[in-house]
Amino acid sequence: MKLLPISFLIAFLSCSGLFAQQLNCSVSIDYNQAGGQSDRMIYEEMQKAITEYLNFQEWNTDEMEYFERIRVNFRIIVSSRPSAGYFRCTGNIQIYRPTFNSTYETILVNISDQYFNFNYNIGQALQFNENSYTDNLTAMLNYYAYIILGFDYGSYGKGAGMPYFKKAQQWVSLSASSPEQGWSSSGIGQNNRFWLAENLTNSSYRQFHDLLYNYHRGGLDQLTENIPRARRTMLDSMSDLQKLVRTNPLLMVSRLFLDAKSDELIKVFGGAFVNDKKSFVEIMQDIDPKNSEKYNAVLAGG
Image (cartoon, rainbow, N blue to C red):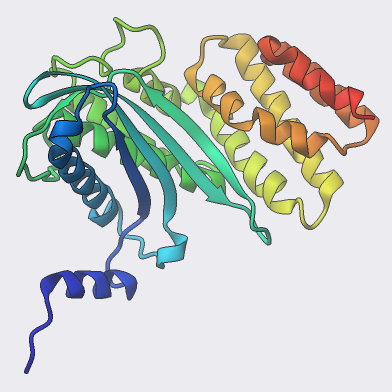
């Protein structure tokens, strides 16, 4: 009997849905700033290792078909390489979600991490350890895997993302003694891994989880069924965000939501009734004044 290569078996089992895999991450590494053309091999190996770590790890017990897995663009930009095995980077994580009865994909959130720094050496195996910090790279990957799951699940079920956001919060705690930036409440303002997890698990901001769900399930997912009603739900969600911003103007999750959704909202409300347009523009100018001209264009469109 001819034995099949192990790589073939892994691919077959993966495609057949026997593994409980949840992520479909496309990882890219831009190392031009670091002048790394001569060290291309380590970046290619790093990219492969990170891709396999994110996509083949079972982050929960839910079995998903390949097409159901959460699509993510995970981009790492290497700014410098102070030593052979240490990389100073920024990270960008874009999480996508399909909408019902449509080919349209919405961006759930677009996260930029200015301190995505880590050690990596050729031949290094990335190993998952659920209960302890072993290195900054796997800690950050674990953290963001749960953030990804939280946003996706939370957009389908009210509050369904909270268990994953709490797991991300656990990684903040496990990484608290790390010398790397991004895990602490101090040092770089209120826009880092610490504050994102804090915002997402703080009971004072529960309203955000409700609007995340309502916006997607009652709004975007219903646009093919009843456009006026879907727009009204989305407008109500932005009104809820307005209340959150007024009481917590520095909230990181509010800014992330606006950055991901502003262009999408402009397209949705471009064809709305005049009264809905006016309400939309008033809300958006209040919570996102720097883009006032962009929102005014909705009214100018007639």
